Length: 151
Ligand SMILES: [Zn+2]
Ligand SMILES: [Zn+2]
Image (cartoon, rainbow, N blue to C red; front, side):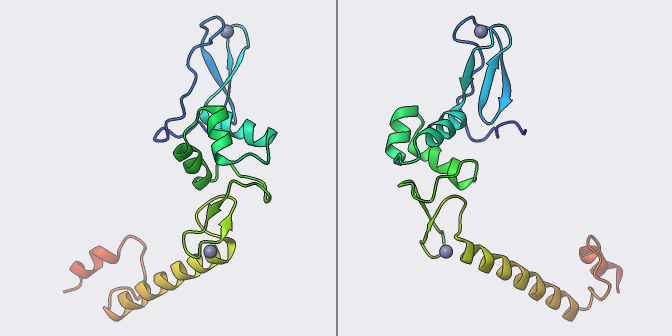
C-alpha cells in the first residue's frame, strides 16, 4: 500500500486523540495508534468510508459529514483514489464530452480516443524525425545528440 501523496493535504492524524501515541499508517486512509490501537482516518479514509456506508450521499452530504472540502473530494475522484457507485448522485463529468463518469478525467469512449490520439501524435513525431534524417535507427536517447554528430 503506497503512502498518501504529499501534494494533496489529507489532514493525516499524527498523534492518537486518546493517549497521544504515534499513529501508524495501515492503508486505505486508516491509521492505528501504536500504543492503544485506537483508529483514526485521514481525509481520504473519511471520504472513502462515508461513501461506502452511504452510497446515495451527495457531494455536499459527504463534505458536511466528513468535514472534507468538496474541492478535496473532487481531487480524490479525479485521482481515482475513490470511486462512487453508478447510481450515486456524486458524479464527475468527462473532460471532453461532459458525460457522467465515476472517477478519473474521461469517460471510457473518450479515454480510448485520447489514447489513440497519443499514439497518433507519437507516430507523427516519429515520421517528422525520419524526414529530418536522424531517426533511421530511432535511438531512444540519441535523437538529440545525433543531429550534432552528423556533419
Ligand atoms: Zn492511543
Ligand atoms: Zn467523454
